[in-house]
Amino acid sequence: MDPAACLDCSDWLLTTTRSVRKRLDFTRPVERSVIERCIEIALQAPTGSNAQGWHFVVVTDAARKQALQRLYHQAFQAYLTNPAFRASYDPNDLRAAQQPRVEASATYLADHLHEAPALVVPCVEGRIENAGVLGQASIYGSILPAAWSFMLALRARGLGSAWTTLHLAFEKQAAEILGIPDAITQAALLPVAYTVGADFRVAKRLPAAARTHWDRW
Image (tube, rainbow, N blue to C red; front, side, top):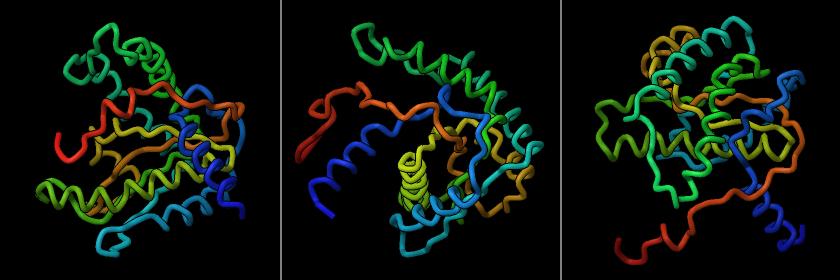
């Protein structure tokens, strides 16, 4: 494989993998084999101490998806009504202009989450409550790279997702719905579907130079 071509493809994949909400195609089934392959790819991600303590709960049952959506929607309503949960930006900040569109998209997903063909919950063995900063970083560092690799693998196959965590406000209830053991930490909730179109573009972000610190902050 031509390294230059591979680099261009990788850059395109990395810079155009968006959190997809309104453009998730809820009418098109997602093949089980596609999700299984994406999970296989995800498990090539780094893992702390070679523990490989990751788990992916794939939810396709309509009743369980509906139950998770109710938890998610309840948490989303609390998010909307509590200013402490939401960032406030200077009017000249590019994020201020983006915020109404982001909120409209997020509201759509909260209302329609259960319609996704699959909901995927990345999990990891261990609990973080009393682990301390080092322990928390190690536990999350052993599942978040795998979850992101899963999302990139989806993108490469014409599917999309959105990184969501609001259901974790009701993590115990979600664990009961899905039969997840007490010793397991849920890291996210990813709706999975094919996308409507594939013309995703590079997002407007704060300049890297403004967020890069050399040698010291």
